[in-house]
Image (cartoon, one colour):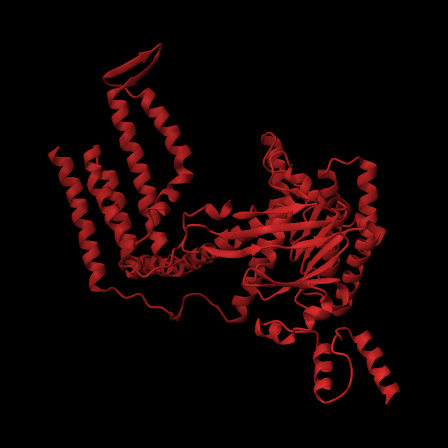
Length: 284
Length: 266
């Protein structure tokens, strides 16, 4: 069953002013449990607005959102409970840090859930471990940490609520390549350990190609397609026409193919490309 | 919800009012306020209100927006009218126990409500129709005689324009931080006063941290571009007064005269 589902979801900003703008138009998505879904789309295509609907931060102008089969705007549904179920990490989440120690800041979410002190402490240590924060960091002030470390604290703060669905808005924006790699691997680890579903907005086609099981492509507030990475990146020309691209390696492969080299076209990670090119060379 | 605050907001457009010289708009707003405060009777307020209606019609700003600008002051209006209606002396209309309502009390209250509402709605029109930059330029230009007294006019207007410029940014930032904390289960809507005050901490601290770092960055960026104050600075947009500006000023003065006359005659 789909854990995240929307029906004809539409949202209009500043309704009734000159700034009126429909950010999300008639979106129907169904994301299955355990999926690691990448969301791509041009700036202003409605990605960020869409994900804020999924934990009830924004109320749709029309249409509905279902989490675990439950319409989150039904009467009797506590929206806070939905937020504990669907964890949302905003862009540049380090700007939400406010406590004087890393431990306390990560504990903010679990404490709001009303958990016992022992459970809060276990979750804080658990999530700090997942994002690679050393135990001695927990006692430090988060404001002394480097940018990348702060980002980890903020992500751990949401992971500590152990949401079934973890949504991240460009979690690795502005980090160096090594840091990006690590954080993405940690997010994957969270999914595997907690059997969670992950949705992740990214502008890097390489990251999306390597880390996701499905890709949701947004265009002008609507869904362009929702499919597996090979199928999505197989539509290179259409992606290009909406200002998106395919991973660099796919472009290389496409060029090799058009130069007459016989290799399959559904290649979108470097590792797979190396394998296929070696096979091709062996055949020759 | 923070986006609903419209006071000080600019609504781009191309009406006569939008195109007017901002200096004249400030003077006319001052005249408008004078109209409202020189009136002593409800009828005396009419020219001022009529003038405001005329301006709204010319500005093509939707009527809804005017009502919206009044929303935040409803509590103030309610509070002061309650005080006035029960505590003014005069011809008693109704008496229940020691609470009484007087004819003069009602008249005065209606007048006060009209005056406050017109004051806010009318002066909102100034920011609705002028961009923050043109407004601060206008303030600098209007205050420039004070330079002779060594008053730091340019610095003042620079501070004003920076403050105005960052209002939307900070509102957006607050919205974002609030959303982020709500996503972590922060509860800001329920609980007593103390609980709510405590709930503000996770919002205020990140907001201050980012406001300070923004200020540092801005100062650095200004210094990198050799900003050194108003001496010898030229402008991208120079304010020009046109015929329409003088006509507008004349009309506003006529309305002020009308207010004074109405008050004298009645």
